[in-house]
Image (cartoon, rainbow, N blue to C red; front, side, top):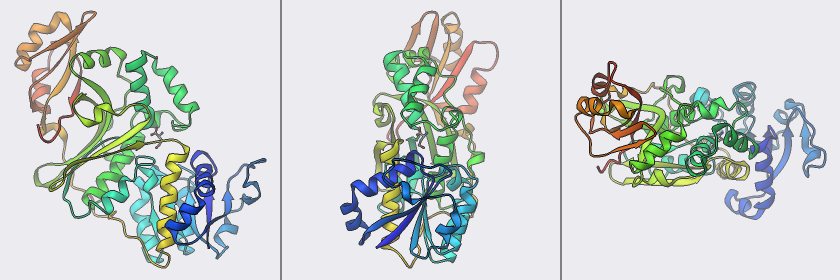
Length: 405
Ligand code: HSE
């Protein structure tokens, strides 16, 4: 029997206990032995909870218990999760986590410490909630040269954009609902300003390249500037707007990585991903594009990914499950020289001048004196030159084209 401890009994931590209870038989089959919850660390008490007697406020009792071999860190944030994780690994316990902030910042170091102590550090739930995307990259797709990963990586912002588009609901109203449903981060700016997606794409970019992508260096734009009008104009042009985490290999295998709202054509598979769902499209040199879809946030879905890590670590007790995180800094490139199409917005009155400047277009959408078009393919630096000056472009977004186009 393997004994585990949960650090942080919030949404995900209590979800882990719930999944272990509900799926005890399946967990035993996957882990190869019974998995028993032995301790829960939290500052609070949980009267009435089925596991209330396991709650402790003293981390040392967990560290000192030789029977606890796996620790689930579901606290979130860097402090004290970083110190607690290091101590558990140094005490010879494997650690799994849903904490993307910690993985993005210290994942490589924590994997090294795990290796030194013959244990594992796994973090499936840190990206894409319940979607087993990291395990897929590290396993089934390991022999592919992955040159492109694009994903809807934040459930809250996708929930907000979908509701604004479909119901005409206000931004604030939908954000409140996402928070009530347990999707949003405690600090909503982590979601709406793109920081949560930034950390997730940095982890994906690191695994894709086997080098270290510094999450703090990823150019990031959130969705607070996106309006219901933008979405309506985008719909008229045959697409929608999604917050996309994107990383792709360019010339000399330099990584172009960013988080930004993109115009997504309706025929792109990511366009149909609605509500709190996430999806990750992965392009491999032999495989072409494959896409992984599922709940990107929420208690049980995220906990399911944590439990998958628990089972893998129990199965592999006594040695380290390898990961592709490495300390070698990734070679990155700016997006300025990438050629793509753009969605641009302007006042209808400025239309003729703008069409002249960008070299014409097939179709314009217009409503209430506002207009939008999709440009032809050009470099971002070229677009900047064409729309420089007082010609009235009020907003531009990149278009997410498929590799095959
Ligand atoms: N706040 C995050 C989201 C939770 O909305 O996707 C999972 O990281």
